[in-house]
Image 1 (cartoon, rainbow, N blue to C red):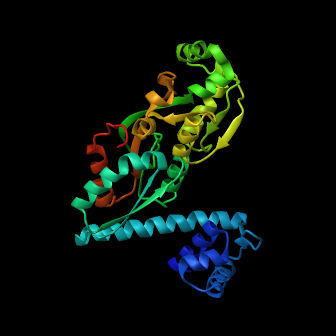
Image 2 (image 1 turned 90 degrees about the vertical axis):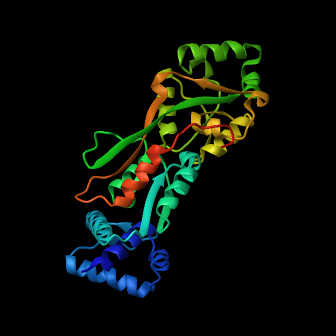
Image 3 (image 1 turned 120 degrees about the horizontal axis):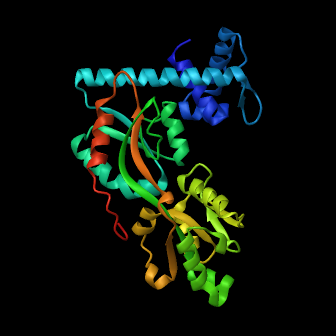
Length: 313
């Protein structure tokens, strides 16, 4: 068994298809299937259930964990020898949420490329919890996310504070509460609770996104179970829908501030619900015996950026 076997198996596990994995690896399905079958014979365990889509057996789940660990160790070795040789080349895999990515990554990547023109960057977008998971599994080199600073296996450095705000249109509120809109908005602002908005439909992001997590906690704390009109992984889409009165939604204040919408003329309410809706955004990478200098350099560039967001920036 060799590194190629690990690469082949990880691709099959992620794609859940021999056809897609073979295309991704640029090999034939026969070669891929034979390689996996050889690994199963060597290990004496069935790794895959040949269903549609493919699924992993218990042995397959365990082998995937080891395969990803081997991949991470091999990549760490390659990166260390790049540093030893003084060779500033390679691919840096950076993870960020789509919402945060378009706000901070253009400036950060541009600044980094001026310092390290021979380093290519692979930008992967996902929900907050996905990013932490991918980093821990070795699929990413560095992430910008909300991360538990006590994680033993991660180096975590705070970048800035962020907060979640409630966004809802005046037109939607008027259709629901008529002449009581001002009273409803005032009550929400005063109490920080959503009780007065129980009749209001909501729009939510994915379950593993930080804004989605805050929304669920806010619903529970207010004792309401509102109608969810739309669920989407794209916060910008939800903001556009909120503008059109489809529903209310929770969004990072930085996304709202960086949008091109004119809220003063659009009749959109931006409501802050208290300190409990605030959190820290950090840059994090795996704690290893040797950290690739490129990772630390990119983290330094991120920490030097001034995250003052202006409308339309």
